[in-house]
Length: 261
Image (cartoon, rainbow, N blue to C red; front, side):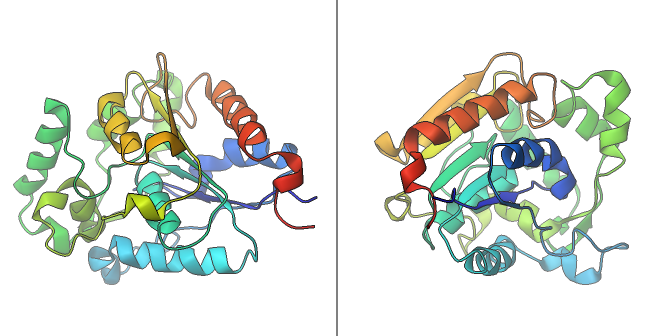
């Protein structure tokens, strides 16, 4: 029996390259992996249309990618990609979800002052929801890449790309979004979910991710990885993260249930 296909979804300001290590390990374990760019994240310079591209646009593109797989996939999402994975799982059939430091869907409140301050700070850039947002080196190195060895941080940051102001607004200031773009109907997500969060993650901290996991009841397994931060997909110890994910998949998707003959 073939194993379920895997669709990996990168986070904001990134590209599929951020998941290369995970992709390599999954493929070595016998999984066929697709890792697409979110819309306009592979275009340089970024087109003006990126500014008002929203989560619904990203999700629509990813739904097409899922349809092309011809089997219910395992979704792996990091940060904003973890939110998109939840949105997709409520709309289409998937086998399992691996959510790595995922952003919260509409209605899940922040649990830390850092999260509240980060959301409020976005308003220092008036009208940001209609703008292209450039990566900010100081912010990325201090809060996203802070658990990487210092010698590696610049190399990762240099690969960051601009992000949609609209999508950022829908993630970070969902309470002001009258369209509820990031909303997820938890009961529509029937696949098992594994949440992995770094204990030192300030962007999507364990306390907030626990509230996300609680939406899904006993379908969700939530674990905290000691010493890891938001870039747990590439920090020292990421190989153990992948080993845990692959172990969990073998437990909840026995070989005879993977994919189609």
